[in-house]
Amino acid sequence: MAILLGIRVGSRNPYQSASAVASPQGYSRALLSALFSAMVGLALLNSPASAADANDVRDITVRVGPQLEEMFKELRIKEPNIRAATNFFEDQKLQPYIPGLEELRVRNIKTNEFTDLFIMPYSESTPMPDVEHVVVSVTGTKGSAVVLGTIAKAPAVSSDSKEQKPPVVKEEYRVIDGKVQPGNHALAKWILCTLGTCMTGVACFAAGPDPIAVGCLCFVCAGGAIACSKDLLD
Image (cartoon, rainbow, N blue to C red; front, side, top):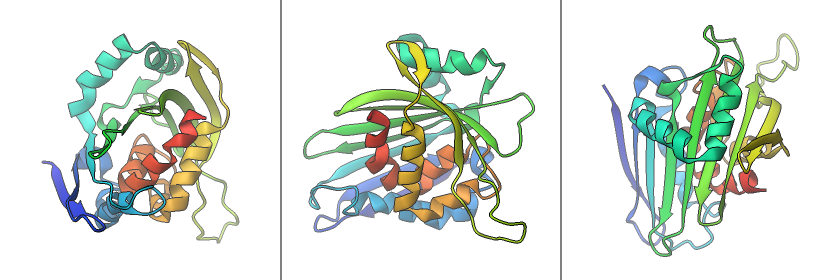
């Protein structure tokens, strides 16, 4: 079974469109409990924070799960930076988590500019609690980049505190010319920037990261994820 979302949002032009396909198998914990928030997150693509021109008309596509497995395999063959990033995790005996694959693509119909985010989560054979390993690829009119890192649940402020803190990027790398190099905090800045536009996304990390937490964040906070993708290019 799949959940199909089709919404139309806009400013003066009511025909800005968004569509998404999500698998309950991968997103049962956070996404299904925040389905309405996901639709609101997609609508944020029309907010001033993510749109330089309020009259822009954009085509939004979100795809998740096993339908992206062939694309994932092809990118590993064709793209040296993605191949290097995925090999880095697999050399540590981590496995790609196929149900958590996600592509978020936005195209400005007026200018034909586009941004494409591809989220590739990894996990241990026995997943560690409160930890997620992820490769993030951004491709678009303004450039491309591949970053990867390990994300952990933020330490509690106190034993009785109910405050939800953003996750912590424990280690981070970026790939340049097919070589994995130390990161420059781009992944951490992108996650914090995205949460800054859409605090609903904190719910994706409420129980600690898991193989779908970053993908959930991109779905729930689609507008922020795209607007903040410039941080991945720094």
